[in-house]
Image (cartoon, rainbow, N blue to C red):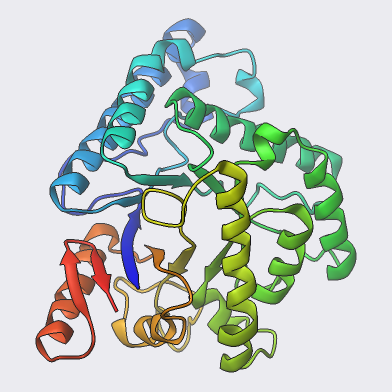
Length: 338
């Protein structure tokens, strides 16, 4: 089984390459000249997009095929006070350059809208905000010219006093979205509320693939045993990806849409939900070995605080395991074979 690792948004190995430079609305309002302020926001956004392209170039040099974009590429993009602002014409060339690079080099990219993008909410104003946020993320992917292999990963959301009702509300409200939005979404289990099984049950109703976060599962397992995770839930999760591959007319190889997981390590015993700087290879490999052979490829996004440095550390450990004959073969700078 081939496993590719990627990282999230920021690079610690490149200098002056933040894709998340921003401006607060308070500072925007202080500028006085609205048109000049909007032009400044567009310059910041273009800098963020150019930094993103620098990161992608470095990823290609380092054989990193998996990357999650920052959701903060365009500052204040969804702020209600700027609802009449359309930054996309000014940013079209920068978005197009990123999309062309991703397509040329066969990279897998995604977004993870922030935690306030919740479709289980009982509050109409929060639902409207969530729809606006999802539309913004999808529009960025469309501006890059990327097809539905490029996904937006979200959680189901809060329980709001009744998790079963909340889950049903998610299915109903998410189902009312247009197909252009629904087709971009993957669902991920979270570390406090919706478990892997509950998220999977909902995803099977909506027809969306499931991103299994193994760290979230360790701290919010819902009473699952390792045997039920590996023997029952994982085959069903893999099946959600096969259905998506069939829907899009893709294969399951790295050029298609293999199953995707998230991995991180607890920050400490006192803070088991927090993410450490790096990723411990032992628990991650234990999971990968438990599902080895179930699918030919898995993509694994590392959600470590040290970003691409954490990926480099993990690959160093993989090379040590390869040298020690531990059943790991390093394929390139971010890929192993079990």
